[in-house]
Length: 401
Image (cartoon, rainbow, N blue to C red; front, top):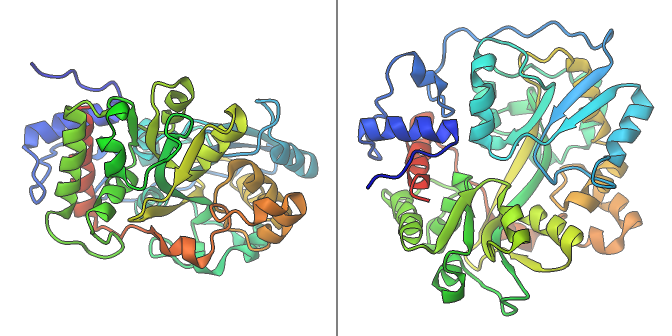
């Protein structure tokens, strides 16, 4: 008996090609023809980069911002106070969309238009480091005009120069965060210290979900296996972590592999534990009662950043740059941090947060101290071929979920 292919078109494409190519770690993907570029991994260049669209910001005072769920301050489940204040201050009408739940799936939905340099329906989008690095590499992003973003001076100095975008010419950090483990603390008041402990708990069989972000789910398991993910790791380390996921899917321990939708299953009770993102759990507790606990595993968690990027086809680049500048005011950044509970990249936001809520300013998941940061690891940069191979192998594992 064979399983049906998944509904997600990206995963369907990956799985079909991986099966056809008999994918191995060191083997080529065997993706031939024009369809090869269409997969979200985009391991090779398409040739000439598309040209930036003409900017209509002066005549059309609008901006569309696309991001992830639970990632902006919200009032009454429908308005965003800091964004409303931006509109009043600038006269720019802003539309905020929560269309990103997974980096690869989002890219799959816009890749064909990006390749042509067309408007993808948003003027700025928030994506994770490894994904924006691809957009920059293949010419899918517009170069920023830093003169329109003077508050970028408030960017944490540690984030100003990154390998995929030296000098932040194309990307600006939005929020950072941790991937760790979370559980329903009413059901499990003693909690867990490791992913393996959750997998071994009989009452959690079929009630655990893990993230569809490869670097987070695989990263936590590799760390527990004693593998450092911040530097080149030994042959076979990635595959051994994949095998742990594969086995626990086959054994019925893992209920599903999901993007942000895992939070819905925690709320409904269909899932009682998860590999999760720190701010999501804080938001769930604020909205649905203090029911869940988040922790970095004893072996460590992963650390990542999501970034603003302006797509090559955006027609409102200057308006998007004004939006980015607005959120780099410490007082505004503190308001966002108070709601989303992720790590703000804005210097001065911690002091501003103290005026909102002193406990907020002391929360090490939002303003991490050196001890907390030492327990979180950033993935080593993968060369395109390795990244493509690992990502495709991970997507193949998702087929069994």
